[in-house]
Image 1 (cartoon, rainbow, N blue to C red):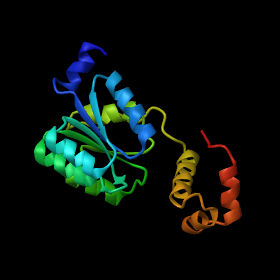
Image 2: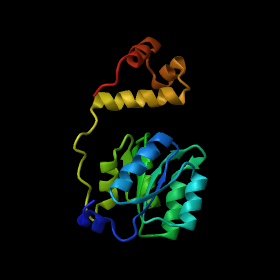
Image 3: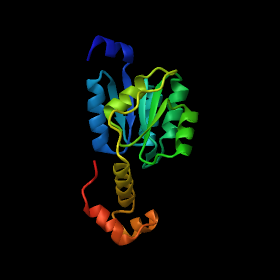
Image 4: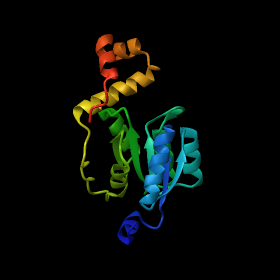
Length: 184
């Protein structure tokens, strides 16, 4: 970590990561620690709000949909306790309505999953009057489609018929897609 990068973060390097995907949280926490942040993690809205109330972070990365509620509740708590905090909302369910709601609640930026640590760090450290740089290697349209299908498949408890119904696609077509490797 260079002195310039540490200066960008500032003296308070506290980072709250709220997400119920444990492997993702561990990877992101390690990656952000290497970038000079001091991460603390929570896996639920209740835990995130408790940490935000007790130790309001300077930075936060919050998943929109959590097992016990909406991540925007955590964003609201952080905003009340620390108005200048930089907050990035992550979600696998990207939609304009949720992005608008996140920004209205006080999020600094809104990223779709899967986002890597560089994207998150850029979003957290970009000055308020600037836009973060576009990702260097954005996902292809085929990869985005494949990720969406996988997400719906998991939400349907890996039930092919239910997933096909929700995606409005033929069951055999879905089975062929699921049998293939993920696109690049």
